[in-house]
Structures are given as structure tokens and as C-alpha cells.
Amino acid sequence: MNPVIPQPHPSTRSGGQILVSQLIAHGVRQLFCVPGESYLSVLDALHDADIAVTVCRQEGGAAMMAEAQGKLTGQPGICFVTRGPGATNASAGVHIAQQDSTPMILFVGQVARGAKGREAFQELDYRAVFGTMAKWVVDIDDPARLPELISRAFHVATSGRPGPVVVALPEDMLTASACVADALPYHTPPTYPGAPELQALQQRLQAAQRPVLILGGSRWSAQAVADITRFAERWQLPVYCSFRRQMLFPAQHPGYAGDLGLGVNPKLLARIRSSDLLLLLGGRLSEVPSQGYELLAIPSPAQPLVHVHADADELGRLYRPALAIHASPDAMAAALAGLVPEAGTAALPWQAHTQAARAEYLAWSDPAPIRIPGALQMGAVMQHLRAALPANTIMCNGAGNFATWVHRFWPFNHYASQLAPASGSMGYGLPAAVGAKRLWPEREVLVFAGDGDFLMHGQEFATAVQYGLAIVVVLLDNAMYGTIRMHQEREYPGRISATTLKNPDFKAYAQAFGGHGERVERTEDFAPALARARASGLPALLHCLIDPQAISPGSTLDGIRAAALARS
Image (cartoon, rainbow, N blue to C red; front, top):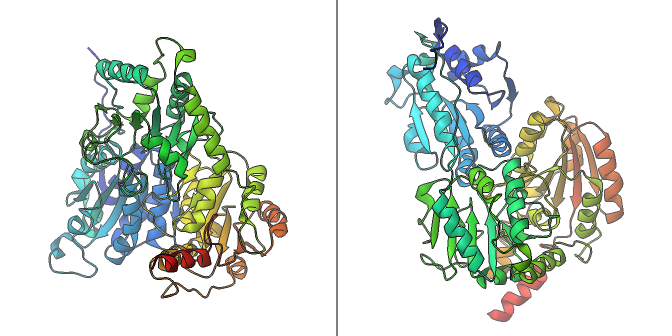
């Protein structure tokens, strides 16, 4: 019989003190916030706590920083905002956490308990506002229940399919007192596959001629990536990563064959459609990776599908699998690492299939042949970044056509090196970079941004300056909302409406905040500008002027317009 470990006798504490003690108990070492009078008691308790607090300039940026740390670590990112407009500003980060399956906890100030339901100053019904966006929303009225409900928040955020939790904190509850013990640290146990499922998978692999492996979702780790790499290598499988999940498999590996994103390689899609076994591990194959739900038939795919997911509710939700395996990616990868072909690797019939898929990826991802209109050649820029930056650089981006340069031409070779919103949220890259650099100051962090994308949360450059975070922003300026303009030319050629931008001098913008800024107009100017930015020791921004015609690596606006007019 195990001895009972006596717990320290709890003392009377304020709700704010109890809350901060729970964060420490659950391993929180950093949090992001925009301060508010609705949670002053928490701010006071943080004064003496061993938690690094990052003060942000807008709640959406704060929530994205927290989400980024959750994505990198698998532990819930923590964000505090005030009630009403503070909460609605933060909702963009909550939506990213939902669609990206990222563990995050948003703590929101709330009106006093006695004022609820009267439409008090900045009052919101958080269950109604966040109920379709968060895994769980809770309003804590009793300070004595803080240990119980915050423990539950950590478990909900990290279990099954991870996601965001919203915790509302009435102002007077935080100043009220209670005598209650702290909760024990949370733990999310892995979900292991059963032996019959592994045996069934092995049999299907042995019988296949053109199998493919697709990786996605969350609940991965560096060890899980190493395990799945060992499995793919032993079975000589072609491996594809889902949209903005390229850090799940090393691009330098001979089995890596590309990613299922926007503007995907047509040859990649053809190989998946012609496969005779599709192993989907961790992902959901949602709208973008499924190419608008056209890649596989719904609900019954033509290819036998083996779907592995940590949340049983996702199995069969959209695609009816031939074999459903309820397992978390980390546990499944560990199990697969020990799975060996019965007749040995040499007997596998699809090795030529894998080699051809790899050759197609290498040709598609080579920036050297790429030529675009204008004096600044982005193919050459990507070549230089690949040569100059460490392989484990954390690459961050928001949403827009500019992101294609990263996703197609940067080789992700390390886990926890990619921060990009599968939700397609603009403005994500800069706050994500702040979150990453606060977490791992020794790592290089680079932001790819568009002009429209950057100014969604450009004020967080001030946060980078305040905390001395030497990130580098490569800002591509084509004076438009480029993705929308591309779609306009495709659907309504020549009818430009609401997509033109008049931009500031971004070099001066960066310098005004106290950072390093440069303007880059020609290819030959980029390399020395990048070297000066990296050597500056400051948050740095390279304002790169792109010809507006260069809307993507393989098309121009005039070409898209001409094709659309020819169809009409």
C-alpha cells in the first residue's frame, strides 16, 4: 500500500493568489496579457510569482503569442485579457487554436457576480460568445473552486483533440478569499493503439502496392517525429505533411514528398489519388489539405483509408475509414517505430513509387529556376535564406500569397520550427515570432509577412523591442491585398475593388519603434541587408519591394486576367 503524502495545510488566500498558484502548479512559466482593471488581483499576485509576463499591445496579438507557445510545446499557452472588447479582440487567437488543434487557455475578466445579466459595463456572456469556438467555457463564481476548475481547463485543453479553453473571472471573485489546497499538476496520458489494430495495419501495408503516409494535427513531439521517421524509412513510404504541418517530417529525408497546402504540386495530388492505401496519422484532412474536399470522396474514399486520431469523435466524422485507430500521434508513432516488414525492406514493391515522389518534390521545391517580374527575385532570396540561416530557424507567417515562398521553398527539417495558422488568420506571423523568441531566445526566428498581413498586428513590433527580442521580419510589399486581388482577377477580371493599399515606409516604421529597418529593392541588396539585420541584435525589418505582377511563383496578374477573359 502506497503511503499517503500529507498535503500542506492551505492558508486563506485571495482568488487572484489562488489562481496564480494553480498556474505555477501546472507548470506555467510564461504568459501573455493586455492588462485590465477586471483582473487587477491576478496582476498583483503575478508581481511575486515566478512567471514571466509579456505585456502586449493588443489582445489579438497576445492570444496569438500564447497559441504559438502552445503549438511549439504541446502545453497550453496562457493569455489574460480584460472583459468585453478585450475578449472580442482575443477571439482571433482562440479561433486559430480551435482550427489548429492547439492547447491554449484564455483567462478573461468578468463583471462582478452581482452585476451579471444587467448588461453591465463591458459585460459579455462568454459561453454564448466563445461556445462554438472553444472546447470549454467556464465562468468561475467561487474562489474555492479555482483549483478544481483550472485543473479541468488544463486537462480539457490538452486531451483528445487539443484546443482552446476560455475561463471567465468575475472581478469580485478574484478579490474574495478562500482556504483551499492547490491542485496536483495536470497530466495528459497518451492513447495507445491496440495490438489487433497494429496487426491489421501491418497486413494492409504488406498487401499494398502504392501506399502513402500523410501526417497532420497536434500532440506530436520531437521524439514522435523521430519515431515516425524511423517507421517511414523502414517501410520506404512516401510521406506528405498536411497544411502548415511541415515540421512533422524532415524535408531532407529521402521519403519526404511534399505538403498538402495551397497551390499544391499537381503531381503530388495525382500520386495520392492513385494510391491503394492511405495512412492518415494525426490530421483530419480538412478543407485546405483535401483541396476543397475534392481529394477524397465523402463519406467513402475510393482508396482504403487508415485513419489514426487522438479524438474518437474525428474517426468517421467526415471520411469512413477502412481501419480506424483511436490513438494519439505520439503513442502511435512509438508503436509504428517497432513495426517491421515481414519480408524485409528490400521486398517492398513501392520503392520506385517513393523515389519518383521524392524527385517530383525536389523539382517543385527548388527555388533556383523561379523567375518573377521585377528587380527583386524571390527565388534567389529563398536560395540565400536556405544557405544563410540555421536549419532549426523558427519560420513564422500569417496568411497571404507571400506565404507560398516559405511553404514551397523552405525545407523544414526540425520539429517545432514552423508557426503558421492552418485557420488562415492574417497578422499571425509577428505575434507568433514574439511568442517563440520569448520561449527560446537562443533560437533564430524569422517572420515572413505581406504588407496587408503585417499591419494586422504590426504594433507587436513594439513588444519585440520592449523585451529585446531579435527577430527578423521579411516584409513583402506589393501594395495590395494580393490573395484577394488574385481571386478578383480570376473571377472579375479587370474590375479592381477594395484591394489596393497605400503603405507606410516600413523601414522608418521599424526604426521608430527602436528596431533595425532596411529597404530592399533589388536581389543583390537582400543578402547584405539580412546580414546587417541579424548582426544588429535588435528586432529587425526588411522592407522588400515586390513587383505587383509577381502574384505567385508561377503566375502574374496579367496572365490570370488574360486567362479569365479568354474563358468569358
